[in-house]
Length: 255
Image (spheres, helix red, strand yellow):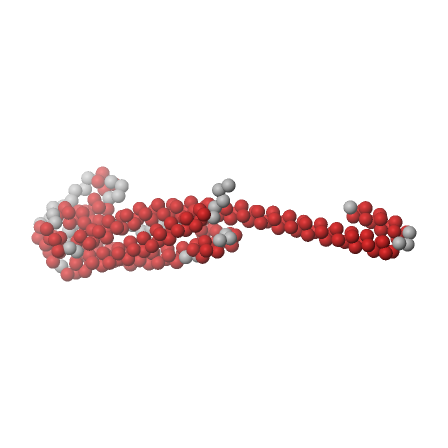
């Protein structure tokens, strides 16, 4: 097309038709500009489509990762709720009426806990690579920005709980009742049961002394208090994850 206009311009110049030459020159420039604009438009459209494809892949990957976290946190919450319930039972006035095996089981359950280890590989890669900017839904991006902070909050509660159990409660309880008596509650995979380590029979007076100790009562209460904070935060986090999953799925194009 440009060669065509060039030939016309050359012919017009040779015929001394300058006004018509100028008109064709302007037309040639106009066509070049239109061509450039069309090329840019096509390039922008291709870039937009590529970004949307990447966005969809990110949304799907994030949804899968959050679903895994939802399953894992649900399991952990169930175990921690059992620990909370056991701690509550050990604080009741009728605790002295429980059999030694019931007390052993409750103590073992109260001392047992799960710490949520979230999978964040996809989320971290999305942040590090800058792909988060490709997510068009601002509300979703705002919601996702809360993830790291919520994990930190839950992690801080877990550290406080662990430190009390490991450094205070467990050593104190072992002064009254053999630690192996708690093993069944700890034994999530039947590993200890296969070792055939039986509980040690101790005098009932040990249990009476155990419950009459203010130090023991305080340690049990602190277990209960720490697990209360943890399980409450777990419920909040479970609801948050469910909300994230719903929003992610609502932005995934299934067509």
